Structures are given as C-alpha cells and as structure tokens.
Amino acid sequence: MMGTSATTLNNNNDEMTEDTQFVKAGLFIYKVNTLVIMQIMVVEFQLEKHSHIYYDTEEDFLCRKQDLKYARLKRKEAYGGGNESNLPLGILGLYEHLANIRTDIEWADTVASRKESSQKYVSWSDFDDWKNSPSSMNNMPIFTYLIVIVSTVMMFVAMSKNMWKIEPISTNPMIGPSAQTLIGLGAKYTDYIVNQGQYYRLVTPMILHAGWIHYILNMIAIYAIGSAIEIAHGSFKTAVIFICSSIGGTILSALFLPEYISVGASGGIFGFIGACLADIVLNWNLVFGQEYNLTEKQDFWRKATIVIFLAGDIALNCMIGLTPFVDNFTHMGGLFYGFVCGIIMIEKITLERRSRSNSSNGNSSRNLMQASRTIIGCIIILLCVKFSLLYLLTGDGETSPCPSCMYTSCVEFPPWKPVDQKWWYCDK
Image (cartoon, rainbow, N blue to C red; front, top):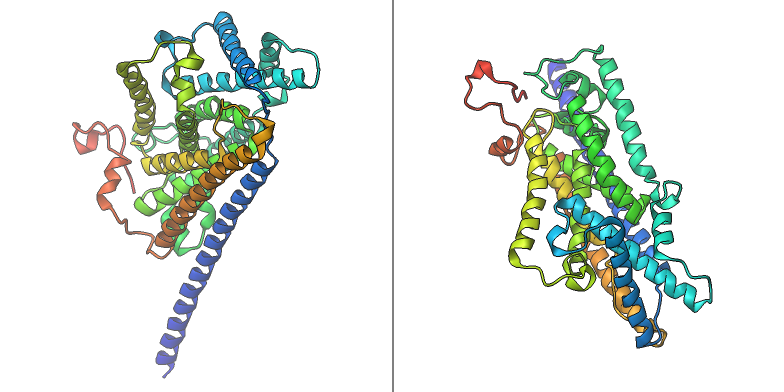
C-alpha cells in the first residue's frame, strides 16, 4: 500500500509539474501577444499624428520637384556619384543612397514650409551639414550604442566566468569561452527552455557572443547597419526591429536545432538587414528611378548586379552561421521578422502632389494603406510567433521537426579531413 501510494503521489506530482509548465507557457505566449498588440497601437498612434506638407498648386509641386533635382545635383557636386555607372552596391550602399534621398526630400519640404510661413530660406549645404553634424540629435543612435555597450560588458563577463581562458579552436573557433560558460550566462538551450521553463533564454542570447571574432564582427555590423536605421527611423522603431528579430530568430533556432546551443546578436543584425531590404522595396522607384537619380533608364544587367551583391551580403553572413554556437536558423528567422517589421513600421516616401483642398481624402487614403500594411504585418508576426512558440513549448525539447536541417547551420570543417583532424566540431 505504501508503495502504491508513493507511486500515485509521484504521478500526481508529475502531472502537476506538466500542468505548471503549460500554464507558464500559456502566460509567456499571452505576454508576447500583448507586446505585438501594443506595437500595433503605437504605430497607429504615430500614423494619426503624422503631418504632411501640402502643395496648393501645380506650380508649388513642380517647385518642390525642382528643389529635389537641385539637391541631387548639389549632392553629386559635393560627394560625387548619382549616376548609373556608380550607383552604390550592397545593402549598406543602397541604404545610404536611400537615406540621402530622404534628406533631400526633407530639405525640399523644409524649403516649401519656410516659404509658406515667410521664414528665412535655408540652403541645401547648410541643411546637409546640420543633418550630418555629430551634435545633431538626429545623428545619435542611442539604442545602437546601448546594444554595443551591453554586448561588450557581457563579453568581458563571459571571459571572466571562463577564468579568462580561451577554449581550443577545435571546440570554439570564435576564440572565446566554453559552452558551459555560455549556458550559465543564458545561451539558447532548448532543453532548459522547454523542460525547465527558462524562457529568458529566448531573449538573453542577443547580448552574448561565442568569442572575440564573433563579437567584433557583430559589433561592426550593428554599428554600421543599426546606426543607419536608427538615424533614418528613430530609436523606438530600431529597438522593435532588433528585439523582435532576435527573439523570433531564437525561437526558430530552438525549434529546429534543439540539441545545439547558440548565442549572438546575429538575429537582430539580420533583422536590420531585413528592415533595410523592406525600406528599399517600399521605395524601389526612388532608389532606382531615373527621375531622382538623373540618369537614363537602368538596364537589366545593372539591376541584376545589384541583386547579386545583395545576395552576396546575406550569403557571407550565412557562412559564419556554419560555425559552432552560431546558427543560420537565427539568421533566417531574424531576416524574416526584420523584413516584416520594416514593412509594418517604415513609411513609404512619396513624391505625389497633395493639396489642401483634397488633403482629407489623400491623407485618409495614405493612412488607410499604411494601417493595412501594419495590421496585416502584425497578424503575420503574431501568428508566426504564436504557433512556433506553441510547437516549441509543447515538444520534448530534444526532437527537431527537421533532423537533417542541422547541416544547414553547423558544418565540421574542413569536410575532406579525417574525423580526428577537423579544425572544429559541431558538439551537441
């Protein structure tokens, strides 16, 4: 009887533990849903208070377009570039090109606004100098600096916890601490997430790095891409893109690679890349159009070259994901969530003529289109996060829905060497 009672008690305890895990999982999913809904509300609020410059006559609108062409000529004169033969390649080059377009359009709007209110004219060179001034609050990527500082602190903490020892290259080719140290600091480890309820491991990997090589490459990427996005779109949108992409990428990694640990801000970095791509897609005609770029129509091969360079940027980063402690599911998940966040939060630049007489209809139409993009994008993110989390947290924390997918994330290198002579190994 005693043995039967003890067995029954143990079974009841196991059931209570499972019920507790499901309750925690449900609460976690509810919190994620709440955050996404809050994002919708914030973006909608920003849409409501967004203002536009209106042009009462066709003459005013043509003056603005003339100002844009003048700004482009001044930029070409000051910095070079601006034609088909040297249109920038790669994600960063195209994004810088788009940022310059935004600056020139902002200058044209400023000129029109000052003219309407009879204020002093501001020259393009003075406006551009102000925009590029380090003292300008527009050029203070606060969130980007914060991520770099926190990641740097955690890199030193990781090395300190590892007694300042660097693990062998065969164990950690990134020149850094051991797997045990990274797990202790909050690395993604699916077994602990699912079976011990350590959901914070879906968040903490974004500020941890596998080693000094991983850290330096990521900090350069964060500063280069993150600061460009933050200067163009603000700290709040940049933070949402980075955090949402990092968490979304980590969930995907935990789901498909449960037996591997991983760390790094790569999910957020790929989120930045996805947001850049979204911005370029939304403003494709401005980036490549002949009206603003003062060039003849670009041919097929020129655009194909640009696409190849964009693909090369992504492929190069994916190659890093083939090393231990870094995985490509985090990269691709971050890229997807970053692109969708970009579609949601980034406003399309318009050169359309808008007059006060039809401002209500025009503004409503623009807000309706932006609101539609926002709602649809948030629904996509909500469904993806919800179902991937549900699939993850109801699993056993050990089995992947795609066992062969591990070969897309970590490869023992070089493949032609014998097993005992590899440069590094993909230890589980």
